[in-house]
Image (cartoon, rainbow, N blue to C red; front, side, top):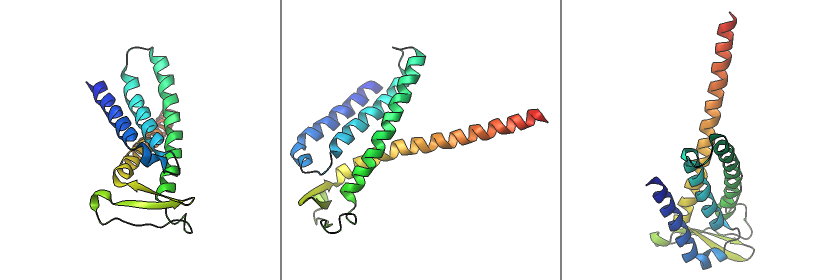
Length: 160
């Protein structure tokens, strides 16, 4: 059942990306490809550790590789996201406007002479797909620090 939900989410992301393909052709960076790849990587990193099709050692190696690729993709996507939404960086060539209609409210960024409108839907998708891996990374760093502290506390306790 969980696999079907992940697959349905992927199909939905692919459908809205294909439906808005002419919209994405105007983008200065391929942020739509980032959204699709990020979703696939997140779904794979969630699903792969609980599969029984492969040996546990192979699953661990593939999951670590996917995690590394996810971190790289998240970093690239973050830069692209800031490029699409940061009007200050494009001060001479960009203007930020907000539409009066809430359904089409968006940020307009003029880059290389052409304007691109990042809709609020894609803005929300981008933020969510960027924050999930960063929050997991932060959790793992905190967990690593705790494990190291407990290790040294246990080692000190045994030494006395």
